Length: 210
Image (cartoon, rainbow, N blue to C red; front, side, top):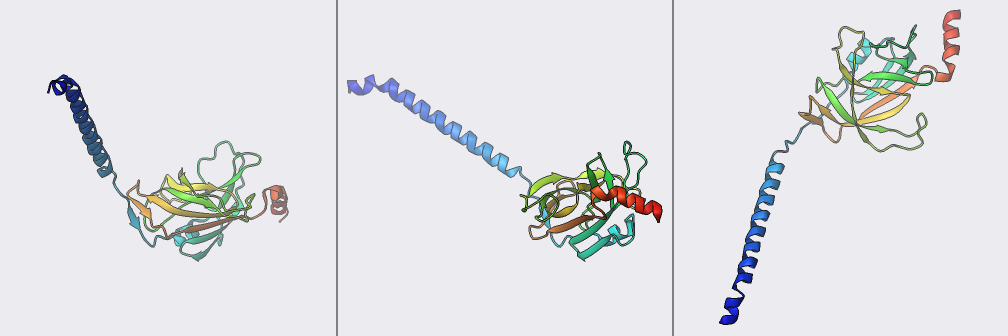
């Protein structure tokens, strides 16, 4: 009996530590549940498609776009003839713009029938195109705001700077995060330049002589 009484302070300390542990475990569990319940799942949108008519009616040159189906586009882009590259603020759909002496890009708008705003997409570069020997990994890419010369297109239209090549877009975030395209919907974009960049001066000579 005297042995038990002498160990009483130690038992009290162990009991107190056990209570503190249970309290910590309770707080951690409650915090985890609160964090989990604040995650708002996005709603899937199914059967989303390109607005093919918007592309064709607003293109800089007739018959630039070919539509394989509602989710596949081929664009034969032509060069924009600019007096200066220092103040490019608006673009025409379907044209290639010089951003340096060796960098030519196509500002490509993303028009979808399921949303007014496309915020970002998973972008995959396909094999067999410019400087690409194999399919790339899909990466999440935020879209860029463009202003186009066509008055029927809203200002700050979302799109991507693309070079000549083949691309796939998927899992697009729409309307500021409210929706996302379903996993089975893949948008295919193929950009082909009218002439290779190295032949642009030949092309300009042909235009002058015509």
